[in-house]
Length: 512
Ligand code: XUL
Image (cartoon, rainbow, N blue to C red):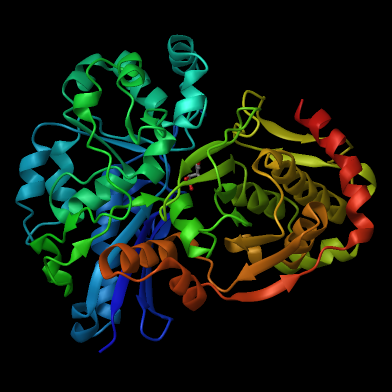
């Protein structure tokens, strides 16, 4: 009888569910809820609530819960009862850094989930903060400065990152300063990942080391919360945080509520992690040596680290690797939404955007570069918002503009990941990894071979693989061989190495 494991990924724009079959090494089934189109009542087309202040990016946590009910309903409708009953364990990942604030009532609701009501209805009165700041929020600059002043260089040396606007600690400090009464009324602060895991187990799930490292609160050297940093962030914060889980140890058992979807109550639920740590697993890159580029809502560059190292320029981060040890990450906020906007504004078809424009222009684009910073960019941070280019962008031919944007984004990926080291292979995932033009540009800029893997939902796949590992005893090397085969490899064209090398100073100039 086949063994199935379910992976869930609660990302910025959607919630995905993926069932893997570890006997056959295949993906058995999947379901997706798009927050914008499936849950329009939350008025969050891209998973974010509108706000007149462009630095504030919040989402409604009840939307994530409604999506959980809906995705499990879709999954059980698509499968027969036997399949649902054969799911042996559940894993999950969430968009990183986002936080959920719960009052004293939450513990009772967790313990008595009622299958006759929806999750969103049951948790509606448990939020001490109605909306959750997510990773796109950049409103906490002042709080970052305050935490950095209080802790000094030790903050990056021990937590893996300097104070960063989107990280949970500075966000919590901002909440404490702007809404002190609501902070006082907060009994528990969860990450998106540990919140959804808590709902699944009907109790307080731990925060895993992988995702917890994105909070500016977790000491990666001791593996637990840093009391001095927590106190410098907000008073009595330690008592409001769940404990940090041990890598590989399940979070708990599935609550009986979920029996209504055909899942077996009591099956183990793995600790949930961040979408990037889960993607590291889902890309078959849990061992050092392979760099991963994920082209999604945000573009990220990450890799397993052989030792604990931090970015001397302060842009990159260290997170926990779900297979043990650490991973590096650099995150670029203007990823696929920026590419979509350029394509729409230029009225270009996907085919032209992915291939045609590249055939009409030459690598290096005669030095013309653009950075589509429509949202306040994270890497590098502190720069003004808007499209930047070193040529007359508006009047240039379409193909030149498209190449300028893609080469600008890829050169930024290369420039800000230099501290991580050199790789012989880059594995690429995310929607844009289907683009021939982007893949070839990555190979030529990085001068390494680029592999695309079949799956674009690497976080959901990674979450399912973590479930198979943590709750079913499967090992990551075997799982990676089974589930992460390469579908396409592109070789670097050596003749363009110097062209791109000489563009790096131009990129730095454009970044300012
Ligand atoms: C990573 C980051 C984003 C989110 C959303 O630091 O902010 O990649 O995890 O995917």
